Length: 557
Image (cartoon, rainbow, N blue to C red; front, top):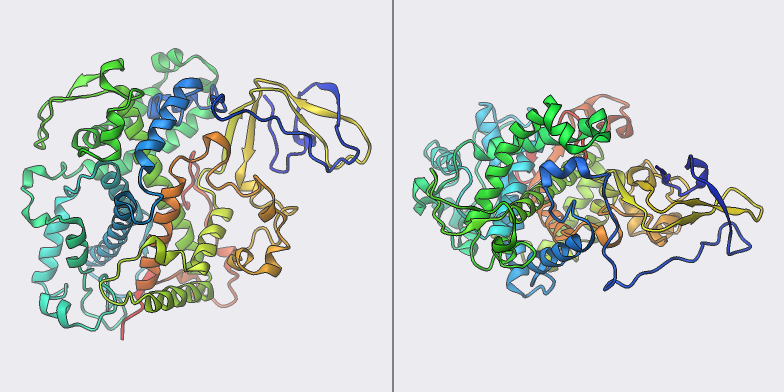
């Protein structure tokens, strides 16, 4: 197996035969001709066997499928998931904006819930924002791919009613006459406050045409399903990583399934994940991405082995259709990819902003300025058009993804011999050849911090993306493949266009409302770079130990 370093130099490639192929240029820095394949003829880069340990998790969905099966499934997923989302005035794009705003609103609501549970309203009390972001983002992706607005947590409506009863939430009169500048204004998370108003729901309920209060109790999700799902997807990340580092990775899959206790643990962990994904498949409404995917030949129930009839179950679901294995695999993939990557990126971004307060203040000022210029000062609802005018917001997101790409590496099986020139060699020599069939690992984390490509590679410098003088110092900004937070090539992240919009809208809404502070900054002389969180192990990376921050409203007196 060949491992390709982040700099692409052959000095880091071992056990690969020199084949005597001469470099096609007189300069060691000139690139070799690139082999190209027509998209219509390509069946994509292969991941097998490097990703076979994901099979029990994501099955044969677009993430792990190969060859023409992958090509057909990816085409279907792109068609169903991204249909209508590129035109800003289309129903698909407007739905995406609506769900992103709803997710931000959910985050703000649950921040207030968290403080209520702790029986304290002091802004000096740090809270872990990671699970709150995970709840918000899983709700977002679930609603977007199913168009099902049945609440996943019945406790949430009871929380709102309870907080209103205890004067913790604004009254309707205060909503209509108050001076808050935001539909999700939380006016008092400061030390002197004695109440935490929850985000106002009127505008979001009007846009979603959903009244949660009118939904019968039996149509809510089972109370513990969402919690169990989030716990399971967190745990499955560790199991899959452990499997990849064990002897089971090298043995046939049937041996792992038959003899490994790790497989038994994986199966137990997969229970809530499959249950949640099946619920999404069953409740998917006509016109939703998951419902459209069900009708595609690549995921059709009639042609998929392992399909099973859907019957009425305990939470009131009725259907006379079937959930195919192909559809279930894809639902698991889409739910996890949409939730985990968004929550992780937002967690890392808020972590960085909390230890670089000057950057956070500048970002909040830009958001407020753009919203005022766009006359979005009441009933805050941020659109893609609005965030496109927030250049510093865009720079902050890009810089956070440069430092902390959610998937720190990717592995691909080479489809043909790949010659690699040693750039440190100043003589004409034969190229080192990575043979066809070798597994090449691209270490994205190292690529994004390569000192030959990035000036001050380990520093958080959002201005590098908007300051022409700073941009010139980064060779990576002008080099194809040097910045790949969503991977690259035909197997890049299929949901990238959606994520770009979601991350910016949610972050703008959150930063417009709240100030986040890492309490470790209180110590004199602390270097923010020394406060960086370690990465939690997993095939995607979260901040180790969570992100515990002090939260305070920007609009408190």
